[in-house]
Image (cartoon, rainbow, N blue to C red; front, side):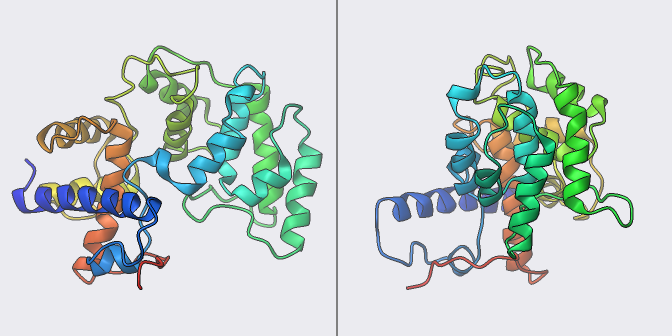
Length: 273
């Protein structure tokens, strides 16, 4: 059962974080909030589609002009594995899959001292001595050769991606891929568009806090899905799809971590005057 106090805190976080976005986007001067935590530290938006990297990805790699390209599904997987606009802009959407050219572009950026990958997602490390770019691009060959099929539900499609055991693509990144594909013709009519999400490590911690469990208690996908659906219902969040609720639970965990003195997010936020 959701604890009232923690449920209220989550509802507050969602309302205030969304208000910050609106104040900032309408050009209001800083500070956009009086909440010192939300003012000083970086948190994702309530809606994933409002996040800067997702907006870039949607405009440049997830653009409708590519939806019918044979490589679109595989490119979405690669794009979210890298998940860094500068790298993806340098690589360009892979209408033609040329791993040698893509790796060279990434190596060149890295050689110039640029960041190559997102800090938000963890990629499974390769064998000792194998460079990360070699590992990621070499493994991408698997899903470019054998891209996943789309089903009538988000859950079935996610399960198929997991079953394929694509290297570097675990359950969490697979969930992020689904969150992109549901915005395209490939999954826009999925029956569970509003009501399904993959549970991630951060959202698991958020659920544990809501239910008064030890923060690092293990929750399986089936239980997590049920509890996320309960959060959406009990807190009146029907205006958010479940994947946005999942996202909020992850950010809520970060917020409570600062509030209770357990730790701080890695990135600051320019919310001060």
